Structure formats: C-alpha cells, structure tokens
Image (cartoon, rainbow, N blue to C red):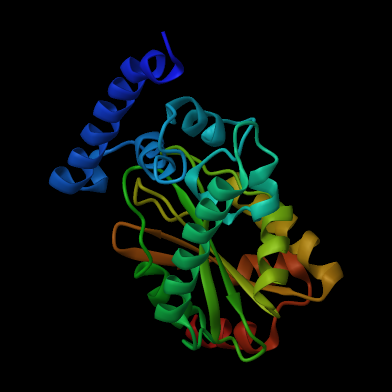
Length: 251
C-alpha cells in the first residue's frame, strides 16, 4: 500500500475535525469555543495535514506559554523553540499577536491619564470578560498619554498572577516612561487584597531601577473602580508628583 493510501484515513479524520471547528466558529462564534479550540483552528492554517490539538494544548500549558495572552505576547523566536513549531507556524502566531496589539493601540493611543479619575474611567472601559480576574499593563509616555494597553494575564475568580519581568519587558517594548496596572475583582469588592499590595510593591521595585514610574494600580468591579494611588505613594516613596497632587485634591 502506497504512502498516499496509508495517510488517507487520517487525513479524512483530521479534515472532518477541522471542518467542525470552522463551522462552530462561523455559526456560533468564538465565545462558544475554548481557548485551545480557537488555537487549534488557527494552527490548521499553518499545519493543514496534521492533528493540531496536541500542539495547541502544549502551547497553552505551563511548560509552554500558559495562556493565549502569553503566547501572543511572545517573540517569534521564543515560539519557534517549542517542539512541533516550524517557522511558518511561529510567524502566523506572532503575526496574530502583533496585529491584535496594533489594533488595540490604535483605539487607545493618545488618551491622557493624568489623574486617578481619568485612569479609573479609562480602566472601567477595558474588556474584562467572564468571572476570572485579568490584568492589564497600561504604558504611558512622559505626559501620561496612553501608548498601549496590554492584557497580559488571566487567572481565577479570586486571583491573578503577575510577573514583574513581564511588566518590565512590555514597558521597555512600548517605550513607556510611566506605567499603570489595572485588574478586575469579579466579586465587585474593590478593596485591595494583601496580594494586590504585594504585587504592586514588587512591580515598583522592578520598574524603579530602569527609571519607569508605576503611577497607579486600578481595581474595577461592579461598574465601579478604585485607585491605589495613595497606597502606591506610600509604597513608592517618590510617586509621580502630578498624580499624587491630583489624588490629594480629589480626596
């Protein structure tokens, strides 16, 4: 039996599965699909004749990039290091992430967040879907105008993990001189947790040596928002004067 005939049954199985994924996407929309299913469908456009399900799971695992956010924020060369990923696949995944970030940046670029009130209103308009906590890093220029808003982590209903190195990398990539953090509390309780305070302190410690200021950490939930600018003033010891003055006036 020749190679073509040997591969035909598997090709039919994979082709049928890919067709069902496309039908689910077009008829029911992306919100009806799990993250690994969306990634599996995307991978079929770079890997047309192989089962992409194992690779999708591997890319989203803790040994991979942990999430879609982590994957699409990764450098193309980092993606290529993963087992089973060739150049075409890595370029496709990196390109999707790059286009998404550019689109998001075009929507928010230039908005000035120079007071806690402006920052809170801005963060309330960000996309927080589902019942899990998500974290955004908002990069600002020296005049506190928005350069980008990157959602970098999604956790559980009660917590979200944020790595200082990720914040530093994004801030440097965006050319930021100031940074804000924003995450949601699905419960609607806006009181900062001990983890929120510890995370804020760690980020300040990571950004300060490279001359970038963490201006604020906003918590949103239930249609409301809370600014941690005063706690940050105490944590930082040298918070941005403009924001600190504005926060004192608003109190």
